[in-house]
Amino acid sequence: MSRYPLKEAEVEFSAIRAQGAGGQNVNKVSSAVQLRFDVMASSLPEALKLRLLARADTRLNSAGVLVIKAQQYRSQILNRADALLRLQQLVDEACHVAKVRHATRPTLGSRKRRLEGKAKRGNIKALRGRVGDT
Image (cartoon, rainbow, N blue to C red; front, side):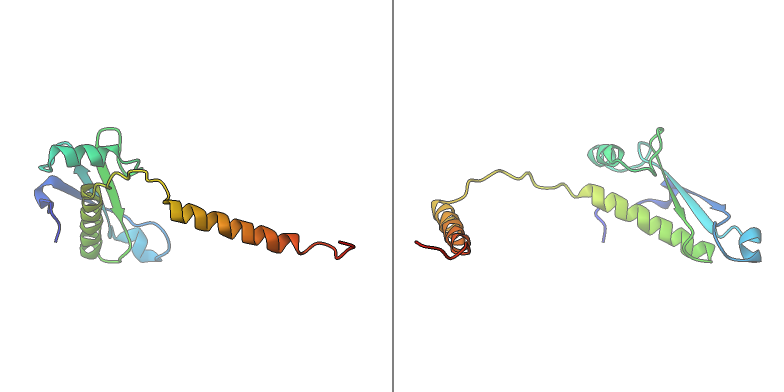
């Protein structure tokens, strides 16, 4: 369940013709769906709106409207549901705020183990040389 379910009144749908192969059907039937969602006019919290607008997404135009085209299915109803699901996933991803990572230093033991491993490996490589008069 999403923390911020979308209201269908805030989403605008338009039926368009799908691209690609499909024979005569693709030329006659508008089965693809274009979803338009105005981020700033929505009822989402202000911080979430700003995170959505800050995303480097080609589906977001300069007016702050998110445009999603769904044409995976041959049915307009299924494409409409797919577009809504993809929009909800985008909103859910924007809800997630990554934790700030604080840099830490390696422990004394881990540094010693690392150096011992490097010395051991160096000795192995040194022994690979030509057998000579030593």
